[in-house]
Length: 507
RNA sequence: GCCGCGUUGGUCAAUCGGCUAAGACGCAUCCCUUUCACGGAUGAAUGACGGGUUCGACUCCCGUACGCGGUACCA
Image (tube, rainbow, N blue to C red; front, side, top):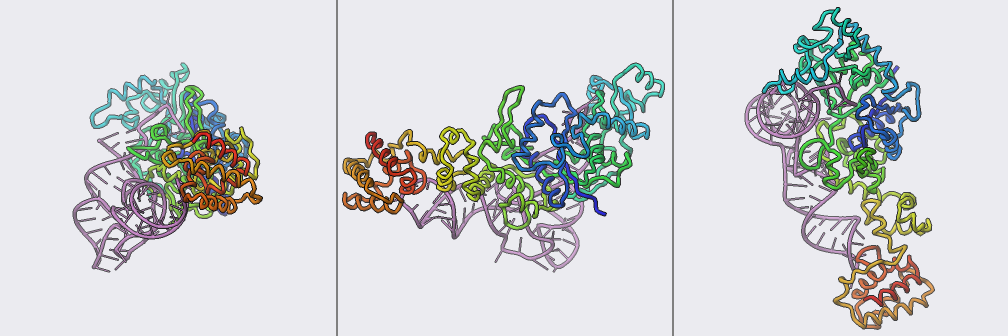
């Protein structure tokens, strides 16, 4: 019988959730849903010095906004609770001890200062980062270099120690990555990783393996930065005797800076003016605020869509996908091997596309939670109509107010410069007359208003084209927005007349 | 340094040995529109380099270069 697919996302609550993280969740989620499997959220909070209060809830909020809710996790529970590494502390110890007794791991008593000293002493031009490996471990204080008596003496004295993995000599570790195919490492090139820290907390290496095993994870997706430590994990699965249940690995390509070198970071967003996190993140210590895609005015559909396409495509030229479509079309073997540069222009294009195809009602509902709209409380039907009229000129949700405020309140300022040169008494008279004659229009709809406007223009012997721009500026304040007559019809007869009157005084 | 992974236009990318190398973003020009957009059309722009294998290589193999990642009692 085939095992049920179970995947997990395991963030460390040390700050905001950036695009790379969200894409990892997304691919996990797509894969799980496609196979009718479970998507688990596990929290890696074993590094207390870097743990940031509130970051865990923030991650959960982000997943909620994205619509990528886990089936099991710290806030909802599940059969393998707890889902927080810090709460599973006692579990890891047992496995670390097992490894020691089997000879696959050992106790190491070196203090941080001693490690630093070792690195300084053995550092050479050719080897700038000496590793705690099969050669150096003989020179350090640990249960391999020291006698049993010495070890038990230090233990009984309460000397702090860590448990390190004993990397085998001269072995080749080969595994198949779902994206990269066969990958191999020489055991000698990997150092003796710490598995259990002096404070009793496991490191990531021990924790992922133990948790993935206990939680029956079948497929493990993570960023490419983890590829070099994969051999450590594979050996752990083997030493712990769980090899047959080891998950299949997939190391996802990195998301790179739009310019320059390296991974996309929070700083790049600040530097180049675009969001990098899913939602606003306020660092509780520094108070520093990092803008999120949500607050920047991105639709979650667009956000997921653009992330999905950053490193994957289905081979067709389709670029717009709903989450549902992604679930059906996604295949892990079509995920790219190479990293992808993040392009904010393309990201905005995705959002624009999604705004154009999202129902007006749905957009209106989101807008109602924005400050401008909240304060004026427009009628639902009216807002929806306005959204329909301006949506194609909005790239992010935050553009809506700028593009539509004149529907709700008169323009605060006029773009005088655009009409100044051609403004004259004849035109002034025209608008005076126009204002009076619309009074008698029973049908205040765009065609009727337009007819009235053009007839009067002809009568006054002015080209309608010369009057259109001034009219627009009277109603809108600037050179933008939908058809003028539609605007007039939408704001209504009274408001139109009022705006003409006010503008006439100012022009 | 060492180890690993990559490399098609400025960016995202298709191609699983037949290429006159798709498509999208961005850019440019034009049409539509007496605003701003939407839409439509056109254009400029790509296989890192060197060897092999093959009738034939962007595609497979090997080197080189370059890029990225890792090299923590961080994840």
